[in-house]
Image 1 (spheres, rainbow, N blue to C red):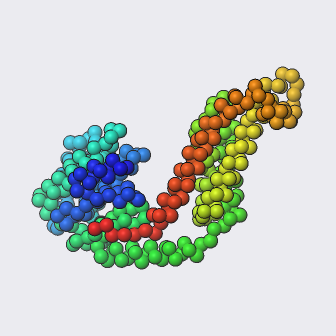
Image 2: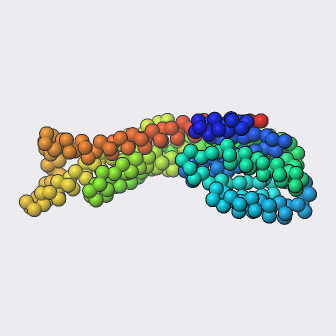
Image 3: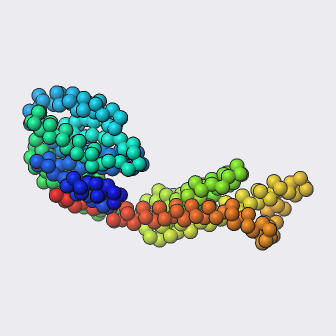
Length: 313
Ligand SMILES: [Zn+2]
C-alpha cells in the first residue's frame, strides 16, 4: 500500500491511508483513485461533464476510442452523466499506478478542451466546484449541498446504529454455526488426506462472521467470544478427524467406531505418534491464527472507518 501512496505522491496526488484512496483537484476537477488489488482494478474517476449536453454523445465515443486503443490495460471506461470513470487493469505485480492516473488526467484534460467539460458534483451532477471527501469506505466529489446532506444522513445512521444492541445469544449461535462449519471443513480435508491451510484459515474466520451476521453488531466481547468458540470447534474437529483415522486403521481388527474414539487419549500421549500429530496440525493452527488476525484487523479497521466522513480537499 505504501508503494501506491509513494507513486501517487510523485504525481501530486494525496492518499487517504485508511481507505487506500488517492485524490487530487486539477483545474477545478476532482480526481479520485480507487485501487482494488484483489480484483486488480484501479478505478480513476473525474467529476466533470460537458457544459453543453449536445457534446455528451461525441465525448462518449471519444471515451470508447480511448479505451479501445488500450484494450489490454483498460477494462472499462464510461461517462455516467456526472463523471468520467476509467477502470484500469493492473496486470503487473508492481502496477504503474502513476502512469494510469497520468494517462487518465491527460485524457480528461483533452475532454475539457474538446467537449467543454466543467467541474461538477459526482452525486447530484450540479455544475460548480466540488470538494473531495471520504464517506466510510467511499470517496466522492461532492458539492456543499450533497456534503451536508450526506453528513446528516450519516449522523442519522449513527444514531440508529447506537440504538441497536448486540444480540449475544444469537451472536453466540452464529459463531457456533460458523465454528461448526470450520470444524467440518477440517474433517473433510483431513479425510481426503490433505493438510489444509485453507480449512484452518476459514475456521479462524467463520466464527467471527457468524457472530457478526447473527448478533447484528460486533463488539470486542463478541470478537473474543467468537474466536474462542471457533478455536474450540477447530480442536473438536481435529479430535474427531484423529478418531476417524484411528478407526480406519483399526477396523480390520474389528474395533468399533466408539472403541476407536476411546483410544484417542492413549494415542495422543504415544511418543511415536506425537511427532506426526504435531506435523499434521501445526499448519492448521498457524493458518487459524492468520484467520483470527484478519478478523481482529477487520474489526479495528471497521471501527475506524465506520461513520467517518471528512473533507480531503
Ligand atoms: Zn451535489
